[in-house]
Image (cartoon, rainbow, N blue to C red; front, top):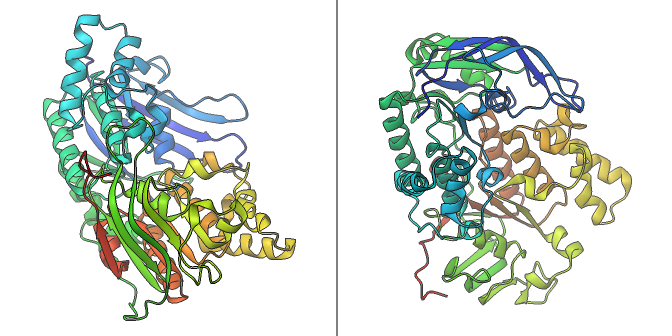
Length: 488
Protein backbone atom coordinates (compact mmCIF):
# COMPACT_ATOMS: atom_id res chain seq x y z
CA UNK A 1 0.00 0.00 0.00
CA UNK A 2 1.31 3.46 -0.93
CA UNK A 3 1.92 6.01 1.81
CA UNK A 4 -0.04 9.28 1.57
CA UNK A 5 1.39 11.72 -0.96
CA UNK A 6 2.06 15.43 -0.43
CA UNK A 7 1.18 17.91 -3.19
CA UNK A 8 2.78 21.26 -3.97
CA UNK A 9 1.96 23.71 -6.76
CA UNK A 10 3.98 26.88 -7.30
CA UNK A 11 2.57 29.31 -9.84
CA UNK A 12 1.36 26.35 -11.88
CA UNK A 13 -0.73 26.81 -14.98
CA UNK A 14 -1.86 24.94 -18.06
CA UNK A 15 -3.07 25.95 -21.50
CA UNK A 16 -4.63 23.32 -23.74
CA UNK A 17 -3.43 22.94 -27.32
CA UNK A 18 -5.30 25.23 -29.70
CA UNK A 19 -6.60 27.50 -26.91
CA UNK A 20 -5.64 31.12 -26.28
CA UNK A 21 -6.89 31.25 -22.71
CA UNK A 22 -5.20 29.31 -19.93
CA UNK A 23 -7.31 26.64 -18.28
CA UNK A 24 -5.45 27.44 -15.05
CA UNK A 25 -3.00 30.20 -14.20
CA UNK A 26 -0.79 30.92 -11.20
CA UNK A 27 -2.07 28.13 -8.93
CA UNK A 28 -0.09 27.92 -5.69
CA UNK A 29 -1.07 25.57 -2.87
CA UNK A 30 0.22 22.77 -0.69
CA UNK A 31 -1.69 19.66 0.35
CA UNK A 32 -0.20 17.74 3.25
CA UNK A 33 0.05 13.92 3.14
CA UNK A 34 -3.27 12.42 4.26
CA UNK A 35 -5.17 15.68 3.90
CA UNK A 36 -8.58 15.70 2.19
CA UNK A 37 -9.34 18.66 -0.05
CA UNK A 38 -12.52 19.70 -1.88
CA UNK A 39 -11.85 21.72 -5.06
CA UNK A 40 -14.61 24.18 -5.89
CA UNK A 41 -15.17 26.73 -8.63
CA UNK A 42 -17.60 27.53 -11.44
CA UNK A 43 -17.74 25.39 -14.57
CA UNK A 44 -14.60 26.05 -16.62
CA UNK A 45 -12.46 27.11 -13.64
CA UNK A 46 -9.91 24.37 -14.36
CA UNK A 47 -10.73 21.87 -11.61
CA UNK A 48 -10.57 18.81 -13.87
CA UNK A 49 -7.40 20.14 -15.52
CA UNK A 50 -5.70 20.36 -12.12
CA UNK A 51 -6.69 16.76 -11.35
CA UNK A 52 -5.30 15.59 -14.70
CA UNK A 53 -2.09 17.48 -13.96
CA UNK A 54 -1.77 15.82 -10.55
CA UNK A 55 -2.38 12.43 -12.18
CA UNK A 56 0.48 13.02 -14.63
CA UNK A 57 -1.85 12.79 -17.61
CA UNK A 58 -1.22 16.15 -19.28
CA UNK A 59 1.12 16.25 -22.26
CA UNK A 60 2.88 19.54 -23.05
CA UNK A 61 3.60 18.53 -26.65
CA UNK A 62 1.40 19.43 -29.62
CA UNK A 63 0.91 23.07 -28.73
CA UNK A 64 -0.07 22.82 -25.06
CA UNK A 65 1.80 25.03 -22.57
CA UNK A 66 2.74 24.66 -18.90
CA UNK A 67 3.87 27.29 -16.42
CA UNK A 68 5.29 26.99 -12.89
CA UNK A 69 5.82 23.68 -11.12
CA UNK A 70 3.64 20.84 -9.83
CA UNK A 71 5.18 18.21 -7.55
CA UNK A 72 4.11 15.10 -5.67
CA UNK A 73 6.59 14.49 -2.84
CA UNK A 74 9.16 16.45 -4.88
CA UNK A 75 8.63 14.28 -7.95
CA UNK A 76 6.90 15.32 -11.16
CA UNK A 77 3.37 13.92 -11.42
CA UNK A 78 4.45 11.80 -14.40
CA UNK A 79 7.26 10.21 -12.35
CA UNK A 80 4.85 9.57 -9.45
CA UNK A 81 2.03 8.02 -11.45
CA UNK A 82 2.36 4.64 -9.73
CA UNK A 83 1.30 6.33 -6.50
CA UNK A 84 -1.80 8.08 -7.83
CA UNK A 85 -5.28 6.95 -8.82
CA UNK A 86 -7.94 9.01 -10.58
CA UNK A 87 -11.65 8.49 -11.21
CA UNK A 88 -12.68 10.58 -14.22
CA UNK A 89 -15.92 12.46 -14.82
CA UNK A 90 -16.71 9.99 -17.60
CA UNK A 91 -16.02 6.41 -16.39
CA UNK A 92 -16.05 5.06 -19.95
CA UNK A 93 -12.69 6.72 -20.55
CA UNK A 94 -10.98 4.38 -18.08
CA UNK A 95 -12.78 1.07 -18.64
CA UNK A 96 -10.60 -0.96 -20.97
CA UNK A 97 -11.61 -4.63 -20.59
CA UNK A 98 -14.66 -6.60 -21.65
CA UNK A 99 -15.37 -8.16 -18.24
CA UNK A 100 -15.70 -6.31 -14.95
CA UNK A 101 -13.24 -8.40 -12.96
CA UNK A 102 -10.62 -8.19 -15.69
CA UNK A 103 -11.00 -4.42 -15.75
CA UNK A 104 -10.24 -4.09 -12.03
CA UNK A 105 -7.35 -6.57 -12.39
CA UNK A 106 -5.86 -4.64 -15.32
CA UNK A 107 -4.18 -1.98 -13.19
CA UNK A 108 -2.90 -4.55 -10.68
CA UNK A 109 -1.36 -6.59 -13.47
CA UNK A 110 0.35 -3.49 -14.86
CA UNK A 111 1.78 -2.84 -11.39
CA UNK A 112 3.16 -6.42 -11.39
CA UNK A 113 1.14 -7.49 -8.36
CA UNK A 114 1.63 -11.25 -7.77
CA UNK A 115 -1.10 -13.29 -9.46
CA UNK A 116 -2.32 -14.97 -6.26
CA UNK A 117 -2.87 -11.53 -4.70
CA UNK A 118 -4.77 -9.99 -7.59
CA UNK A 119 -8.17 -11.67 -7.38
CA UNK A 120 -8.69 -11.22 -3.62
CA UNK A 121 -8.03 -7.50 -4.15
CA UNK A 122 -10.39 -7.43 -7.15
CA UNK A 123 -13.19 -9.09 -5.17
CA UNK A 124 -12.64 -6.82 -2.17
CA UNK A 125 -12.75 -3.70 -4.35
CA UNK A 126 -15.92 -4.78 -6.19
CA UNK A 127 -17.63 -5.58 -2.90
CA UNK A 128 -16.50 -2.28 -1.36
CA UNK A 129 -18.20 -0.21 -4.06
CA UNK A 130 -21.41 -2.29 -4.07
CA UNK A 131 -20.91 -3.34 -7.69
CA UNK A 132 -23.67 -5.97 -7.52
CA UNK A 133 -22.49 -8.22 -10.36
CA UNK A 134 -20.08 -11.11 -10.81
CA UNK A 135 -16.54 -10.70 -12.14
CA UNK A 136 -17.60 -11.90 -15.59
CA UNK A 137 -20.24 -9.19 -16.06
CA UNK A 138 -19.81 -7.58 -19.49
CA UNK A 139 -18.67 -3.97 -19.17
CA UNK A 140 -20.66 -3.14 -22.32
CA UNK A 141 -23.88 -4.10 -20.54
CA UNK A 142 -23.29 -1.79 -17.56
CA UNK A 143 -25.26 1.37 -16.90
CA UNK A 144 -23.46 4.68 -16.41
CA UNK A 145 -23.67 4.37 -12.63
CA UNK A 146 -22.41 0.79 -12.68
CA UNK A 147 -19.44 1.90 -14.80
CA UNK A 148 -18.74 4.62 -12.23
CA UNK A 149 -18.63 2.02 -9.46
CA UNK A 150 -16.38 -0.20 -11.55
CA UNK A 151 -13.97 2.66 -12.27
CA UNK A 152 -13.78 3.46 -8.56
CA UNK A 153 -13.16 -0.21 -7.75
CA UNK A 154 -10.26 -0.27 -10.21
CA UNK A 155 -8.66 2.70 -8.49
CA UNK A 156 -9.27 1.52 -4.92
CA UNK A 157 -7.74 -1.87 -5.73
CA UNK A 158 -4.45 -0.08 -6.42
CA UNK A 159 -4.43 1.49 -2.92
CA UNK A 160 -2.97 4.78 -4.22
CA UNK A 161 -1.25 7.33 -2.01
CA UNK A 162 -3.09 10.15 -3.83
CA UNK A 163 -6.77 9.60 -4.69
CA UNK A 164 -8.21 12.03 -7.25
CA UNK A 165 -11.98 12.10 -7.75
CA UNK A 166 -13.70 14.13 -10.46
CA UNK A 167 -17.46 14.34 -9.84
CA UNK A 168 -17.58 10.76 -8.51
CA UNK A 169 -21.35 10.73 -7.88
CA UNK A 170 -22.39 12.31 -11.19
CA UNK A 171 -23.72 9.07 -12.73
CA UNK A 172 -25.00 7.47 -9.53
CA UNK A 173 -28.55 7.17 -8.27
CA UNK A 174 -29.14 8.66 -4.78
CA UNK A 175 -28.66 5.33 -3.00
CA UNK A 176 -25.50 4.64 -4.98
CA UNK A 177 -24.18 8.12 -4.22
CA UNK A 178 -24.71 7.61 -0.51
CA UNK A 179 -22.89 4.26 -0.68
CA UNK A 180 -19.97 5.91 -2.45
CA UNK A 181 -19.69 8.58 0.27
CA UNK A 182 -19.64 5.78 2.86
CA UNK A 183 -16.78 4.11 0.99
CA UNK A 184 -14.81 7.34 0.76
CA UNK A 185 -15.39 8.05 4.45
CA UNK A 186 -13.91 4.63 5.24
CA UNK A 187 -10.88 5.42 3.07
CA UNK A 188 -10.55 8.83 4.70
CA UNK A 189 -10.76 7.46 8.23
CA UNK A 190 -7.85 5.14 7.55
CA UNK A 191 -5.83 8.18 6.38
CA UNK A 192 -4.30 5.81 3.85
CA UNK A 193 -4.39 8.33 1.02
CA UNK A 194 -4.33 12.02 0.32
CA UNK A 195 -7.61 12.92 -1.35
CA UNK A 196 -8.44 15.72 -3.79
CA UNK A 197 -12.10 15.80 -4.75
CA UNK A 198 -14.14 17.79 -7.29
CA UNK A 199 -17.85 17.81 -6.55
CA UNK A 200 -20.37 20.50 -7.51
CA UNK A 201 -22.92 19.48 -4.88
CA UNK A 202 -20.88 20.18 -1.78
CA UNK A 203 -23.15 19.28 1.12
CA UNK A 204 -22.58 15.54 0.87
CA UNK A 205 -18.83 16.01 0.46
CA UNK A 206 -18.21 18.40 3.35
CA UNK A 207 -18.16 15.76 6.15
CA UNK A 208 -15.39 14.03 4.21
CA UNK A 209 -12.92 16.90 3.81
CA UNK A 210 -10.57 18.95 5.96
CA UNK A 211 -10.26 21.87 3.61
CA UNK A 212 -11.86 23.73 0.71
CA UNK A 213 -9.86 25.28 -2.14
CA UNK A 214 -11.72 27.55 -4.58
CA UNK A 215 -10.46 28.17 -8.13
CA UNK A 216 -11.57 30.97 -10.44
CA UNK A 217 -11.13 30.99 -14.23
CA UNK A 218 -7.74 32.46 -15.05
CA UNK A 219 -7.10 33.56 -11.44
CA UNK A 220 -5.82 30.51 -9.61
CA UNK A 221 -6.74 30.00 -5.95
CA UNK A 222 -9.16 32.64 -4.67
CA UNK A 223 -10.14 31.03 -1.33
CA UNK A 224 -8.52 28.35 0.82
CA UNK A 225 -9.20 27.09 4.31
CA UNK A 226 -11.43 24.97 6.57
CA UNK A 227 -14.92 24.54 5.08
CA UNK A 228 -16.67 26.53 7.83
CA UNK A 229 -14.33 29.51 7.37
CA UNK A 230 -14.49 29.49 3.55
CA UNK A 231 -18.29 29.45 3.43
CA UNK A 232 -18.68 31.98 6.25
CA UNK A 233 -16.39 34.48 4.52
CA UNK A 234 -17.10 33.80 0.84
CA UNK A 235 -20.60 32.27 0.55
CA UNK A 236 -22.18 35.22 -1.25
CA UNK A 237 -19.32 35.65 -3.73
CA UNK A 238 -19.21 31.90 -4.37
CA UNK A 239 -22.96 31.72 -5.04
CA UNK A 240 -22.74 34.69 -7.42
CA UNK A 241 -19.89 32.94 -9.28
CA UNK A 242 -22.05 29.84 -9.72
CA UNK A 243 -20.65 27.61 -6.96
CA UNK A 244 -23.11 25.43 -5.08
CA UNK A 245 -22.95 26.54 -1.45
CA UNK A 246 -24.52 24.65 1.47
CA UNK A 247 -28.19 25.40 1.90
CA UNK A 248 -28.59 27.16 -1.46
CA UNK A 249 -31.72 26.24 -3.39
CA UNK A 250 -32.65 27.38 -6.87
CA UNK A 251 -36.04 29.01 -7.52
CA UNK A 252 -38.17 26.74 -9.71
CA UNK A 253 -39.57 28.41 -12.83
CA UNK A 254 -43.23 29.33 -13.00
CA UNK A 255 -45.25 26.30 -14.06
CA UNK A 256 -48.16 26.51 -16.47
CA UNK A 257 -50.49 23.67 -15.53
CA UNK A 258 -52.89 21.79 -17.75
CA UNK A 259 -51.28 22.71 -21.08
CA UNK A 260 -50.06 19.29 -22.19
CA UNK A 261 -51.06 18.78 -25.78
CA UNK A 262 -50.95 16.04 -28.37
CA UNK A 263 -48.84 12.92 -28.14
CA UNK A 264 -45.67 13.23 -30.23
CA UNK A 265 -43.87 10.01 -29.25
CA UNK A 266 -45.45 6.88 -27.77
CA UNK A 267 -43.72 3.83 -26.31
CA UNK A 268 -46.03 0.87 -25.82
CA UNK A 269 -44.72 -2.14 -23.88
CA UNK A 270 -41.27 -1.32 -25.27
CA UNK A 271 -38.36 -3.46 -24.18
CA UNK A 272 -34.78 -3.96 -25.33
CA UNK A 273 -32.10 -6.61 -24.92
CA UNK A 274 -28.56 -6.00 -26.13
CA UNK A 275 -27.09 -8.72 -28.40
CA UNK A 276 -25.70 -11.60 -26.37
CA UNK A 277 -27.09 -10.30 -23.07
CA UNK A 278 -28.70 -12.82 -20.74
CA UNK A 279 -31.19 -10.31 -19.40
CA UNK A 280 -33.03 -7.35 -20.95
CA UNK A 281 -31.66 -3.85 -20.37
CA UNK A 282 -35.19 -2.45 -20.13
CA UNK A 283 -38.33 -4.12 -18.83
CA UNK A 284 -41.56 -3.58 -20.75
CA UNK A 285 -42.29 0.12 -20.45
CA UNK A 286 -45.05 2.41 -21.73
CA UNK A 287 -44.70 6.18 -21.80
CA UNK A 288 -45.96 9.04 -23.93
CA UNK A 289 -44.25 12.34 -24.68
CA UNK A 290 -46.73 15.15 -25.22
CA UNK A 291 -46.24 18.69 -26.46
CA UNK A 292 -45.84 21.40 -23.79
CA UNK A 293 -44.93 18.81 -21.14
CA UNK A 294 -41.80 17.59 -19.35
CA UNK A 295 -41.53 13.94 -18.35
CA UNK A 296 -38.77 12.92 -15.91
CA UNK A 297 -37.48 9.35 -16.12
CA UNK A 298 -35.95 8.24 -12.82
CA UNK A 299 -34.85 4.99 -11.20
CA UNK A 300 -31.78 3.22 -9.86
CA UNK A 301 -28.67 2.46 -11.88
CA UNK A 302 -29.25 -0.51 -14.18
CA UNK A 303 -32.99 0.10 -14.61
CA UNK A 304 -32.69 0.98 -18.31
CA UNK A 305 -33.12 4.76 -18.24
CA UNK A 306 -30.48 5.43 -20.90
CA UNK A 307 -31.82 2.58 -23.05
CA UNK A 308 -35.31 4.08 -22.85
CA UNK A 309 -33.91 7.47 -23.87
CA UNK A 310 -32.29 5.92 -26.95
CA UNK A 311 -35.56 4.19 -27.85
CA UNK A 312 -37.59 7.38 -27.47
CA UNK A 313 -35.03 9.25 -29.55
CA UNK A 314 -35.33 6.77 -32.42
CA UNK A 315 -31.71 5.66 -31.98
CA UNK A 316 -32.51 2.07 -31.01
CA UNK A 317 -35.18 -0.27 -32.35
CA UNK A 318 -37.07 -2.07 -29.56
CA UNK A 319 -36.73 -5.84 -29.39
CA UNK A 320 -40.27 -6.00 -28.02
CA UNK A 321 -43.24 -3.64 -28.13
CA UNK A 322 -43.04 -0.45 -30.17
CA UNK A 323 -41.94 3.19 -30.14
CA UNK A 324 -43.91 5.25 -32.62
CA UNK A 325 -44.53 8.85 -33.60
CA UNK A 326 -47.85 10.54 -33.07
CA UNK A 327 -49.74 12.08 -35.98
CA UNK A 328 -48.44 15.60 -35.35
CA UNK A 329 -44.80 14.47 -35.49
CA UNK A 330 -45.23 12.01 -38.36
CA UNK A 331 -47.16 14.36 -40.67
CA UNK A 332 -50.47 12.59 -40.20
CA UNK A 333 -49.14 9.02 -40.24
CA UNK A 334 -50.03 7.65 -36.81
CA UNK A 335 -48.06 4.80 -35.24
CA UNK A 336 -45.07 5.08 -37.55
CA UNK A 337 -41.94 3.56 -35.88
CA UNK A 338 -39.40 6.35 -35.50
CA UNK A 339 -36.39 4.01 -35.44
CA UNK A 340 -36.79 3.57 -39.21
CA UNK A 341 -36.63 7.26 -40.04
CA UNK A 342 -33.78 8.67 -42.10
CA UNK A 343 -31.14 10.74 -40.33
CA UNK A 344 -32.37 13.91 -42.04
CA UNK A 345 -35.94 13.36 -40.90
CA UNK A 346 -35.02 12.33 -37.37
CA UNK A 347 -32.65 15.24 -36.72
CA UNK A 348 -35.39 17.74 -37.48
CA UNK A 349 -37.96 16.03 -35.26
CA UNK A 350 -36.15 14.65 -32.20
CA UNK A 351 -33.10 16.10 -30.47
CA UNK A 352 -31.13 13.68 -28.28
CA UNK A 353 -28.54 14.47 -25.62
CA UNK A 354 -26.44 11.45 -24.70
CA UNK A 355 -25.25 10.54 -21.22
CA UNK A 356 -21.65 10.84 -22.46
CA UNK A 357 -21.43 14.11 -24.45
CA UNK A 358 -18.29 13.02 -26.33
CA UNK A 359 -20.31 10.33 -28.11
CA UNK A 360 -22.09 12.94 -30.22
CA UNK A 361 -19.22 15.30 -31.09
CA UNK A 362 -18.07 15.22 -34.71
CA UNK A 363 -16.43 18.57 -35.54
CA UNK A 364 -13.15 20.25 -34.67
CA UNK A 365 -14.66 23.37 -33.09
CA UNK A 366 -17.68 24.29 -31.00
CA UNK A 367 -18.99 26.58 -33.75
CA UNK A 368 -18.72 23.85 -36.39
CA UNK A 369 -20.35 21.32 -34.07
CA UNK A 370 -23.41 23.52 -33.65
CA UNK A 371 -23.69 24.01 -37.41
CA UNK A 372 -23.83 20.30 -38.30
CA UNK A 373 -27.54 19.74 -37.60
CA UNK A 374 -28.89 22.88 -39.29
CA UNK A 375 -26.67 22.23 -42.32
CA UNK A 376 -27.98 18.65 -42.48
CA UNK A 377 -31.47 20.12 -42.66
CA UNK A 378 -30.43 22.18 -45.69
CA UNK A 379 -30.98 25.55 -44.02
CA UNK A 380 -29.53 28.67 -45.72
CA UNK A 381 -26.06 29.70 -44.45
CA UNK A 382 -27.42 32.91 -42.92
CA UNK A 383 -29.98 30.95 -40.85
CA UNK A 384 -27.34 28.43 -39.80
CA UNK A 385 -25.08 31.26 -38.63
CA UNK A 386 -27.96 32.91 -36.74
CA UNK A 387 -28.85 29.74 -34.85
CA UNK A 388 -25.23 29.02 -33.99
CA UNK A 389 -24.67 32.58 -32.73
CA UNK A 390 -27.84 32.51 -30.62
CA UNK A 391 -26.99 29.17 -28.99
CA UNK A 392 -23.40 30.21 -28.27
CA UNK A 393 -24.70 33.22 -26.38
CA UNK A 394 -27.65 31.47 -24.73
CA UNK A 395 -25.57 28.65 -23.28
CA UNK A 396 -22.54 30.83 -22.51
CA UNK A 397 -20.25 29.10 -24.99
CA UNK A 398 -19.41 32.14 -27.13
CA UNK A 399 -15.90 32.47 -25.67
CA UNK A 400 -15.27 28.83 -26.67
CA UNK A 401 -16.58 29.05 -30.24
CA UNK A 402 -13.27 28.04 -31.84
CA UNK A 403 -12.22 25.52 -29.18
CA UNK A 404 -12.13 21.78 -29.86
CA UNK A 405 -15.19 20.22 -28.16
CA UNK A 406 -13.04 17.52 -26.58
CA UNK A 407 -10.94 20.14 -24.76
CA UNK A 408 -13.92 21.58 -22.86
CA UNK A 409 -14.65 20.95 -19.20
CA UNK A 410 -17.31 18.39 -18.31
CA UNK A 411 -19.95 21.06 -17.70
CA UNK A 412 -19.07 22.86 -20.93
CA UNK A 413 -19.32 19.62 -22.91
CA UNK A 414 -22.75 19.00 -21.45
CA UNK A 415 -23.95 22.49 -22.42
CA UNK A 416 -22.59 21.98 -25.93
CA UNK A 417 -24.39 18.65 -26.28
CA UNK A 418 -27.67 20.34 -25.27
CA UNK A 419 -27.00 23.17 -27.73
CA UNK A 420 -26.45 20.72 -30.60
CA UNK A 421 -29.82 19.13 -29.86
CA UNK A 422 -31.50 22.54 -29.87
CA UNK A 423 -29.82 23.68 -33.08
CA UNK A 424 -32.34 21.90 -35.33
CA UNK A 425 -35.36 23.25 -33.38
CA UNK A 426 -36.86 19.75 -32.88
CA UNK A 427 -40.37 19.19 -31.57
CA UNK A 428 -39.15 16.56 -29.10
CA UNK A 429 -36.10 16.70 -26.80
CA UNK A 430 -34.71 13.63 -25.02
CA UNK A 431 -31.96 14.56 -22.55
CA UNK A 432 -29.91 12.05 -20.56
CA UNK A 433 -28.55 13.64 -17.34
CA UNK A 434 -28.61 17.24 -18.59
CA UNK A 435 -27.37 18.68 -15.26
CA UNK A 436 -24.24 16.51 -15.14
CA UNK A 437 -21.21 18.65 -14.19
CA UNK A 438 -23.17 21.92 -13.99
CA UNK A 439 -22.43 24.61 -11.45
CA UNK A 440 -25.25 26.45 -9.69
CA UNK A 441 -25.58 29.15 -12.34
CA UNK A 442 -25.58 26.86 -15.38
CA UNK A 443 -27.92 24.45 -13.56
CA UNK A 444 -30.42 27.28 -13.10
CA UNK A 445 -29.95 28.39 -16.70
CA UNK A 446 -30.63 24.84 -17.92
CA UNK A 447 -33.79 24.74 -15.80
CA UNK A 448 -35.03 28.05 -17.21
CA UNK A 449 -34.15 27.09 -20.77
CA UNK A 450 -36.08 23.81 -20.67
CA UNK A 451 -39.04 25.46 -18.95
CA UNK A 452 -39.15 28.04 -21.76
CA UNK A 453 -39.01 25.28 -24.39
CA UNK A 454 -41.91 23.54 -22.67
CA UNK A 455 -43.90 26.79 -22.77
CA UNK A 456 -43.11 27.02 -26.49
CA UNK A 457 -44.77 23.62 -27.02
CA UNK A 458 -41.83 21.22 -27.01
CA UNK A 459 -42.20 17.68 -25.65
CA UNK A 460 -39.28 17.08 -23.28
CA UNK A 461 -38.04 13.87 -21.68
CA UNK A 462 -35.35 14.22 -19.01
CA UNK A 463 -33.50 11.16 -17.69
CA UNK A 464 -32.05 12.21 -14.36
CA UNK A 465 -30.80 11.26 -10.91
CA UNK A 466 -31.10 14.92 -9.90
CA UNK A 467 -34.15 14.93 -7.64
CA UNK A 468 -34.18 18.69 -7.21
CA UNK A 469 -34.09 19.25 -10.96
CA UNK A 470 -36.90 16.75 -11.59
CA UNK A 471 -39.06 18.27 -8.84
CA UNK A 472 -38.56 21.80 -10.17
CA UNK A 473 -39.18 20.99 -13.84
CA UNK A 474 -41.18 17.82 -14.47
CA UNK A 475 -44.95 17.66 -15.01
CA UNK A 476 -44.90 13.86 -14.74
CA UNK A 477 -42.38 11.26 -13.62
CA UNK A 478 -41.84 7.69 -14.78
CA UNK A 479 -39.82 5.58 -12.37
CA UNK A 480 -38.14 2.48 -13.77
CA UNK A 481 -37.07 -0.61 -11.86
CA UNK A 482 -34.26 -3.00 -12.84
CA UNK A 483 -35.66 -5.64 -15.20
CA UNK A 484 -36.11 -9.19 -13.98
CA UNK A 485 -34.65 -12.05 -16.07
CA UNK A 486 -38.01 -12.87 -17.63
CA UNK A 487 -39.22 -9.34 -18.33
CA UNK A 488 -38.22 -9.14 -22.00
